[in-house]
Image (cartoon, rainbow, N blue to C red; front, side, top):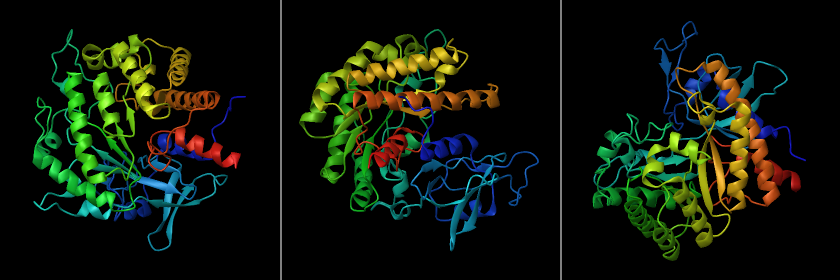
Length: 416
């Protein structure tokens, strides 16, 4: 019988994702030595501000004693708060006594991020970032869909994405958005940094990503090239996943036959051709929904079940632009999850955050329930089909905006 309640570890993570953590001196002090958050804590109007600056640096991610990993989201109205210090340790506390305080730690900034390559480039600027034990390699972040000709006045970029615009990141990495290959110097810097990670005990997964190219054959060429560069350093010590867009069959086979990657993840983002065309107009125009599904199916044939994934953006379908009720959106998403799983393709659901212009409190409440019900239903689907997420691809130690690995970890513990 399907569970109607998330396990405690996943429920805590969900609460922290939505409620966030309000500021305390302990949280501010913990930023010293912690992996830096991309978003500083911003004090709300009328909220006590001990810094007097209106904002403060805070850590990026926390880990509980039960190994729950969560991004630190600042929220002055949250019932969660951090106390303690670096000498005696930190605790996560709740305003209600029924939630006992528990020890936490903040993910530290790794030693390699403070180093420089031989030519003096800071290693944290070489196209590698870290999600706890997952190294994400993105040496070509700019996406051609941002510059593609608009259709009926609409951009070709994905509707939820603001990351792929050409900017200082792509310029610093030497990326020419219209060139398939990357400069030798870009690869040399990346490999020097990667060598530091491979020789440490910090990394258990390597994930290759990059901005999409309008010609999927060119994207295939780029990822074959990138994977070769990565394996020249990695030497298959750490599992590697290709997180590109959908690729033509010959490049999927080449990635497998040359033993360049261990898994692939072609991000479909949403289920149904109609929604795909609205949310991902560039992907639909240049590749097409049916071709995307066919590429995933071919990848299963080549790599086998358990090694083919697709990231999904959970909750964007609740937006007013897509014409779905809550129940229609949830049913459609679960139908899609089962359809994909039945083909040997494993979806991974990341949370979509509504933006300004929505009734945010109502949108968050609706989205929270949606994300919970989707994960409960999807957990049952995985169980029914006997499909599990390979820990060489992703685990609960690096999945900070997803719940699947936390739910499955709890199920594994219960079985034992």
